[in-house]
Figure 1 (tube, one colour):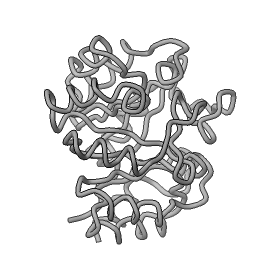
Figure 2 (cartoon, one colour; figure 1 turned 90 degrees about the horizontal axis):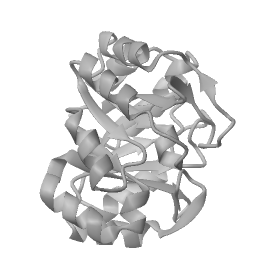
Figure 3 (cartoon, one colour; figure 1 turned 90 degrees about the vertical axis):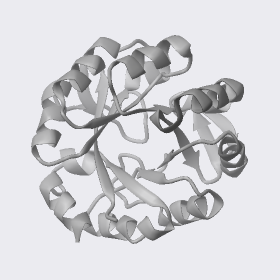
Figure 4 (tube, rainbow, N blue to C red; figure 1 turned 180 degrees about the vertical axis):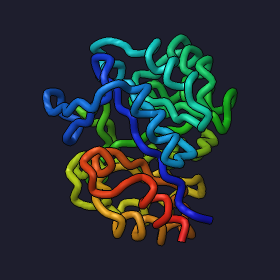
Length: 240
C-alpha cells in the first residue's frame, strides 16, 4: 500500500492561502480556491484537503465557496475548519465531501464527537494539532490537553482516523516529525494522516516508510505552493 497524498487548499477571505505555524497575518495568497483544487485534481490527486481557515478561528465562514470547490471536483475531499456543532457538520457533509475533519470540538465537546462518530463512522476524522505532547485548540491559539489521553478517549469512542499536525512544523518546510507519527501509531490502531513540515521528496519517502506502522496519508501544502516539487513528482515518489 502506498502513501496517499492530500494536497491542501486552505481558504481565508475567499482566497487560497498558506500560513506559517497557523499564525494570522502570515498568509501568502495563491488565488482562487476552485482553480487551486482543480489544478491538484488535474495533476493526479485522489484527495484534496480543503480547509476553511476563517471558520477554524471563528472570524467568518467560506462555507459556500468550499461547497463550490467540492461540487466541481471528481476526487475525494477531506473538509476541515470550524465544524463544531450539528449545523456546521450537516452543512459540511451536505457538500458531498468524503469526510470531515473535526478539530477543536474533539477537545471541547467529547460527548458530541462520540455521538457523531457513532452516527457517521468513516466520514468523521479527528484532527489533533500538537506541540510536543500538548494539544493546540481554537486555531492553535489555546492549549487543549494531553495528546495521548485524547487518543485513548477517541479510540474508545471508535474514531476511524486521525489527522495529526505538528504545529511547530506546519508551513516551515523543515521536515515532518517522524517520531511523533511513530508514537501515535504505536498508541492507536486507527490510520493516521500526517500533516506539517513536508519540504522535499525525501520527506515523503520517510513518511511512506511508516505506512506499515499505520501512517495512511500525508497532507502537503506549502512545499507544493513554493515549488519544492510538483504533485506529479510527489505521487510518483510515493508510488514506488
